Length: 494
Ligand code: NAD
View 1: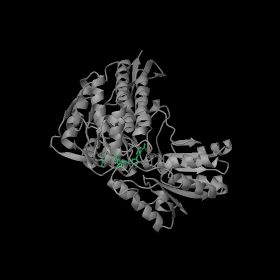
View 2: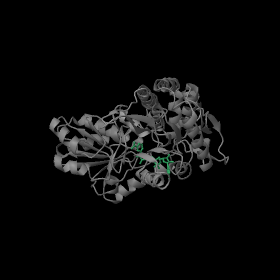
View 3: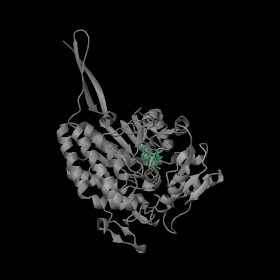
View 4: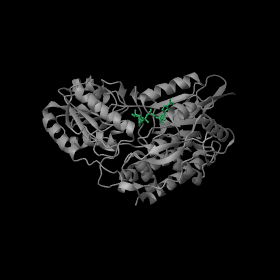
């Protein structure tokens, strides 16, 4: 049984939930207001836990703790090696609790338990270890200063970082931001998504066990317009690292501009194209396209939601893609034979179904799926539309659900134009054997990541982020450390 869970009504396994309070200055505490909010299990719609709800007063306390830890505490002052050692210890502890953590995200977000165990949690600890290794390699440059001077640069931690993250990968998002911030010597105030607050609180507990000093990591679950806005408008937060929708990204920039001009990095939405050329192995391309859109129930910022297939293989591709979608098993994410769990919550479930209705009313042809897949819970069938045109809502807007729009193209130039025809620019996929096509398309597509004959290949060393309205700034890679560092020039008269 997963994570010491117990079987609840209807046979679903519910993990034990240990941490539901705010984590401020090394302690689990109630909200100042005493308020809590419900987090629900998308498999049933039932309440999973009541979690302390942070408001402005709690964010103030968390920022104060982070500021004190930054100005007076050990973390920014200890050697990078020592910070890295503690981060590695945290990674070991997370690894030891993989089963429980995957179960928490499984019940909170509807994510597959198996994938949590083999992808989400291991990827998070890989990220932590990558940046633990970088913590003692932060150095500046010697400057060529003319005249009777010598100069060098120092890289210093930026200060208190507000981390605001979405619900689709609660574990990975937490460590994607927190790992480089910690390595740099920053302190953080993390606001997990209101739909999925549970694993972040568990990580705060493990960080304390690993030896991260009090005040360095604070976790304040709550809503965006209250707790989130209190972070972005706070005069004592130096930087905000955000992942979420383009719409909220814009609000965050406005709030940063109106308050203390804090720096922001924005990882936002996407509408990524997967382009399949005539020379592709059709079976391999169909499998890739299925993964690209139905993995994690389409709740992936880089989901391959627009699939462009060249005319020579289009008919065969469509037939096989429909068969592949119909064999993608929807069900309880704790069942190892399930391929796709429920959408994260009722709002997301209804939003996806509404997009499906838009697709039909705009004239696209629904080939498979399009309906709820169960009577209870937020399950939706894997859905495929054809006869989609680039101007339709389902081809332009981020659905964030298991809905594939399949489109036909003739030439390389034509598909490059189509691939670039949305406001987003997060990722793209290309399936072909031609090196010439790979080179042309990967250089012409305006996206932060291009996958060739693969999809979702992530590595901590590969910078990740968006072009256009998919945001700016990069997560992952050594360069991501720069978001959490200031550069100081020191010039000395000889
Ligand atoms: P969202 O923008 O609604 O919420 C994201 C976070 O912002 C949540 O924690 C939320 O509480 C908070 N928030 C909401 N309003 C706020 C406000 N006014 N001030 C401060 N914080 C506020 O996004 P979501 O629905 O949680 O996640 C889905 C979106 O995230 C999709 O658009 C998806 O593409 C995007 N996403 C992007 C990436 C990426 O790396 N580019 C990765 C995952 C998800």
